[in-house]
Image (cartoon, rainbow, N blue to C red; front, side, top):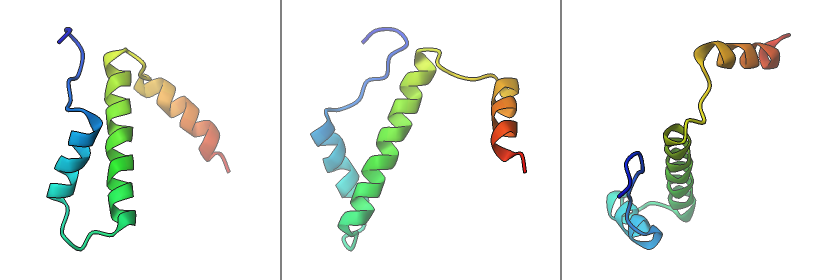
Length: 69
């Protein structure tokens, strides 16, 4: 593994592990949601490793534009 990279099991194994953690009554929608959230987290972690982040000041500046009344 290269320094600064995140290693994870292959996607099918990740889904198997996820299914083992969910309750037996989980709906397909629940499963889809958990897969979606895990993918977004993984993508965010990769961005951090690659230095694609915002400073707190830049974040505040961008959010201020969105939240103006």
